[in-house]
Image 1: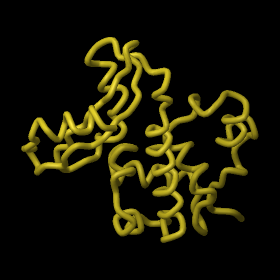
Image 2: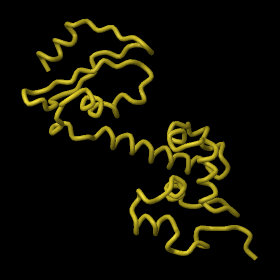
Image 3: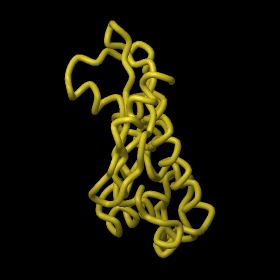
Image 4: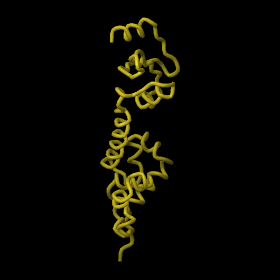
Amino acid sequence: MKNSFTIHDLPKSERPRERLQRFGSEALSSQELLALILGRGIKGESVMVTAQRLLSTFGNVRAISEASLEELTQVKGIGLAKASQIKACFELGKRQDLEIDLKDFDIKDPQSIVKAIRATIKDKAKEHFKLILLNSRNKIIGISTISIGTLNANLVHPREVFKEAVMP
């Protein structure tokens, strides 16, 4: 007699992989997405239970993404291989955010600037002074880091900014 619940005990229409194929990834819960990344549970335990344990331990997906390999492997059912898979998925997501197409990006207001560079600065512990170069049509032609400061300050001489802008 079988004591544990597995994905195969679910009707096909309720399994995460089939739901993703049918409805798209947006329709899946965080637990289901994590279950797909993990692939399988441990002996006597469904991957859905392991995925829920991850969410319960860390509280939310963002906290899981910020967890170290060591922290992830402290969760029952998560070894180094599964922790590495999780970290790799989140890193791909970060890199995808960095690949916005800037050549057709219009700068209309301060929010446009935030949108253009948010992904490159969101996880930084220190202040970054960025220079965004625009053409006459307010299209981005370049972004460069002029200076990396401390936790809450950044000293930049105007000549550093002008040098970069005049001689890119």
